[in-house]
Picture 1 (cartoon, rainbow, N blue to C red):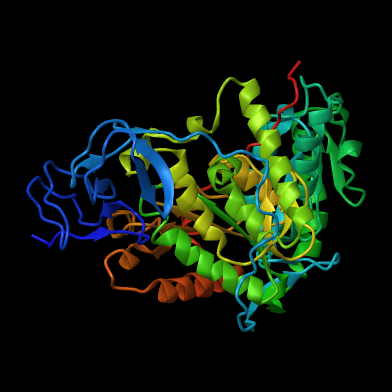
Picture 2 (cartoon, rainbow, N blue to C red):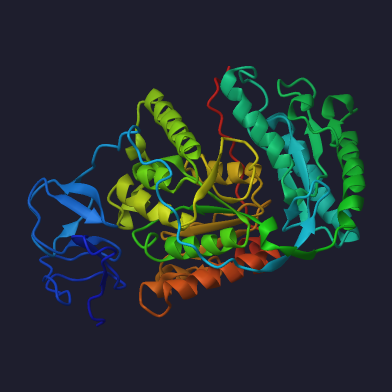
Length: 500
């Protein structure tokens, strides 16, 4: 049997997580530590010292919970015997007080597609966007026909993507918050992976009229103007051929990493997320920023408990205040629904060793690296400027990914400990496993195994470089496992406005 192995993240921590596959049995002795009075599963926390009821429980050097009852050294520490701390207040926070250490710039390139607007894509895709869910069935048929009948004639086009959604009608289209889904759809159609060649399919009578998307160069097909199903398909295919001709002329060329926009996300997180995959991704993010590129990190409820870290790292006090405004707005949104940030954690998170949202947040934030936060991207907006940007999205995998696509991300990096086949068709999605066991079992779904960091086989620095190199390879056309299997999830618009 393997010797007991645990990870203590910070010298002030009074808990550690179990590394061993299958966890540890009662009676196991931690090197220079306690004997376990009971079994502790892999990834879960054990007390390194005796804890009295009410004592703070520290991981990542911060208080993630308080003991709900007396816990002896070696005891399993989980959501059932801990108490969630109050959310940190949003006043009297540090504003732009931390400066990242000076580091050498990075020089690197990838093979991308330059667009007329100056952006650079990593894929060459025909996007068929829709103004309303009513047309989704027709578009599905049309996309199948385009893929089977037209794409073989245009070998330089990587594929065709239907950007369908459940918005467009039966909504309060002029409500103030309706601006969010509308600008999200408009900015998705402008994503650099689509080469500026939008094809819009409208029904005709919907509230979201095509003019609201403000896509003056788009080809438009309106189904209510056609004389039946066959002519609808013919009209879409005719418009598609024009766009495919232009897309087929595109060629990859050498581009600096400063032209890259990378979205970071985690889902199905576990206790290893914050010690393997996410910190390695943070090191890769730092390299991209040092090369002049753009990195988007997100997930409002999964950074809320670490807001002081974010405001301190903001490049300016005003950027810090923007972060505060976005998280305060999201607090109010959750309160209207009668919940708070504690509703975020899933059964899978807890089964993977995450006791509560505070612990989850500390492990989530580290994927942003150490660079100054150079800006904030509001919901549905296109990212402006370069560097590390906070895209203020919900934590939902599908909504966050959709909003990062709208923000202009051209590569997506997604870390997971519990495992998820999540992928986006319009955005190559690199999957990073936090545990070697997951990477072994899902060998044809996980692109990178960061679990070797936990076992000491790979250093964090080495894994960070591996993630960085893999991002550049995928940006240059190397397929992800999701692309090989043609796995993709539906887009999910965030719509806080009323549905009528």
